[in-house]
Length: 317
Length: 303
Image 1 (cartoon, each protein chain N blue to C red):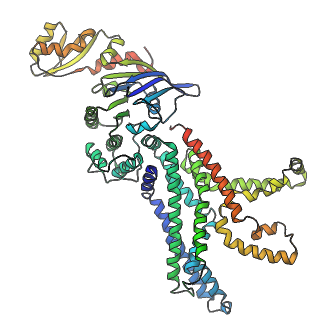
Image 2: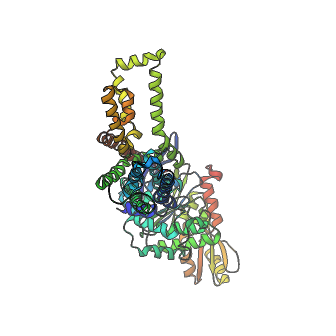
């Protein structure tokens, strides 16, 4: 608790957290409302809205419920995602700052229990992310309510319990990236390098997989396929994307649109038969939430073990 | 029980041996100078005592308990350059440290700031602090929880003479509370004024452990040169002549005198017995420094 208290005290004294919060809680919803107003102004009175399609879309996206959901879901579609940017910046503040400011020699004498130190920092990172997400939820409701004044939206309607569930799910899924960010920033002994690694390493590894998969399918290199077949690894190799870090990390954020894609996929499947090949994955029949939860829990456990081992054993230079 | 104890403390980085088999015991309340040239192994030893790095072999205890461990909660440290969170004020940095420690009453933050005379600047961000202010703030932080042991690594580095004098005064007050202090420096003259024992280290090996007068003896000096101050310099000179010690005036109220090694510790008593009111007496810095250099050699090369 001492570490949590101290780090909580520290984290809110850094300006970058307020900038992040300002972007997420104010700039993003205002931007969405402005775009919505422009779109509505352009097509609200046109034939497109004859059947009320524009009004319905507005209600889905910028009503209090819709905007709150959009603020939780939207960051998962950015590149790099806003979530990973928040995670990295908070991790850099909580663990990179000690290295940058040469503070480990002070912190680890004042509080020599290293397990307590790192646990406290992880807890504070998760709490700070929880506050950021909760703030976005509230900002979505407030700005959405303001939007009802100039947009064809209403406060009523919306699956509120699902929204709360989405909030908790998205928050819980951030534990693995927090642990990964702490691990990388601590291990590479550089805040900047650590931040870059967190932002791009998982994507890089996944890109390497794609390149290898492509190469393996080229004729002159069919020996790779032969080896996979011989080792009975072909299926495992092909199912690897199901376990990719980024694919699973954003599962809660992507679940709402994935549902839509799946429904579309089912219709196509019924029309063209069950064999849709890679198209079925594209349409969202790939990663389910329970699967993603298991995968992220496994990642979190792995990163936690590595982080605690590294942190408790390393000398402080 | 010893306050600090090191047994065959060794730290190797690859093939390089930063500290080799260092063994010493420091009793509670002792103020010990830890001297040696730059790169001699002082900081590495202090880091091992503070639990920041693990010894390759050997062990260290503080207040009878192995480090690293919970006992470090009784230790205050200033290791190398003082460091803080620059975006926080001095007071906020102390509040953060107090929260991290967990058993520091809130009033101690203000008390510590007052002790190091930083109340006026307490609410300025640390990035605006001068080097001297940062050193004083680091001392305030090290004293927050009334530590029983203080590990200070070159705490006067970068301070001007006034700052050094103020720091020395603060440290004397801390020492008066009975805390054990291990203070490192690469300049013996910086610590000789308030330490009663010296550990000298060079190239990772402990070369000397003893009092200042023993240091002079081991370094080959036949006599200890004192600078003695008295209200009546003529009476002082006469008494020194009667005692058979060669002396020369060294200013309006002071005299330099060479005392045989065996009698060095009794000089003040002998002068008092002869009716001289001595106002101060200290081992000549020049004399000590040359003894120290003879011990470790110029440029750290053993003589």
